[in-house]
Image 1 (cartoon, helix red, strand yellow):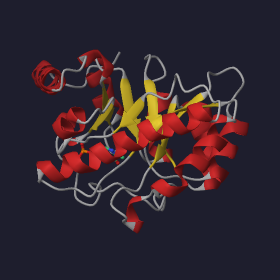
Image 2 (image 1 turned 180 degrees about the vertical axis):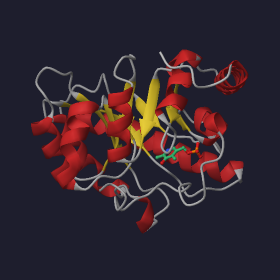
Image 3 (image 1 turned 120 degrees about the vertical axis):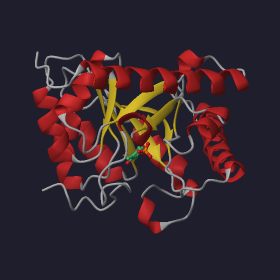
Length: 257
Ligand SMILES: *Cc1c(COP(=O)(O)O)cnc(C)c1O
């Protein structure tokens, strides 16, 4: 195993992870939730394979990636580790195969076409791909995701695809420092999940695995947990600022060549 980082750096990362876990515990306690039902997903886009290895050595097991080419290189370089990989970026429908073959989770499902391709490309030997449908909460065309009105239809389609497991909903609300506003958005997503469960229950679907709210990033993690998040997607607060130009989630897939 390569040791390219000093112990000081690794110790700092361990401290940061411990602080984040404490933050998760505190927010869970505040809302009378079990902290064990909240996963810290380390968002490792733009970070090196060595950075991920250090975070793994410090105890993290779940990593989220946005850019296909970059992620495949890191997955190959870290094949000796037992990592659960989450794809959290946008993909073009002709780029679904590597996601179906190399990831355990897909957070940004927003089209039937992509669902069907992922389903047919998911290798039989692997567990079904865990999927979250991305909801556009802020009505911003640039953020990806579907409008809540069309959620039941897409959800029913996904429920019927055997190589996909519909796990829940994901959103990236417009960033705001206003905690009230943060919580309103996350509460909306939580309500949508409850309504979806009811709708699908009534239609005779098995919703026991529909338990996931992928919401909350470095700037709004606590608000998300207070409103029921089960996966917080944390990049900056874990690894530090990304270089300029890579901060906002890309939505057009242009950097996937
Ligand atoms: C980059 C990214 C994150 C992490 O954002 P931070 O603010 O750095 O924590 C979370 N979710 C998605 C979809 C992202 O693209």
